[in-house]
Structures are given as C-alpha cells and as structure tokens.
Amino acid sequence: MLRFIVGVIFFLIFCLAVILVLPNAHLMVELNYYTGHVSIRLIILLLFTLCLGACLGILFNLLWVWRLRRDHQKLTKLYKHALREVDELLTHSTSHQESSSK
Image (cartoon, rainbow, N blue to C red; front, side, top):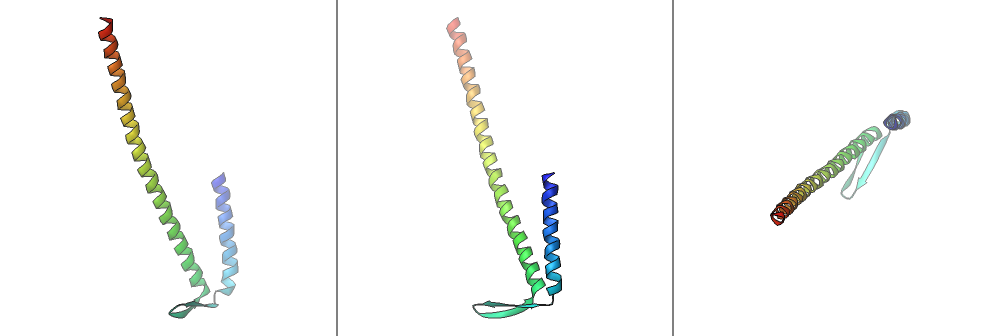
C-alpha cells in the first residue's frame, strides 16, 4: 500500500513538472562557466539533470548494496567460526566428562 501511495505521489509530481515545462519548452537557458558559456533549451537542461540525478542515485544505491553484501559475508564467516568453536567446546566438554566418569 505504501509503495502505491509513493508511486502516485511521484506520478503527480511528474505530471506537475510536465505541465509547468511544456509551455516553456521553447525557452533558451544560458549556462555560464569559467571558460565560456552555452545556450541550450530548458527542456534539454531539465532532462539532462533528471538523467544525471537518476544515474547518481543508482550509483550510490549500488555502493550501499555492495557494502551490505561485504558486511554480510564478514558476518557469515564470523558466525561459521563461532559455530565451529562452540562445536569444539561441546565435543571437548563431552569427551572430558566421559573420561572423568570412567
């Protein structure tokens, strides 16, 4: 249900952006930077920033997932090591009790 609501909100924001941009699609925007300037259409600038933001979001999400996978692998190794130690302690304790009872 929450995903549906978030999807509807994003869709409404997208529709609002389209409604505001389309009447002004013919406008030219001048970008000034250190070595010069360039004039491009507003719609192209908005599409470029949207794609750049999406790519950055995907990149940071992938970095986060990779870190989680690495942490999961480390914790799995620690868990297996701890299980081996517990098994060894139980085996040692059991053999020690058997030898002392004889």
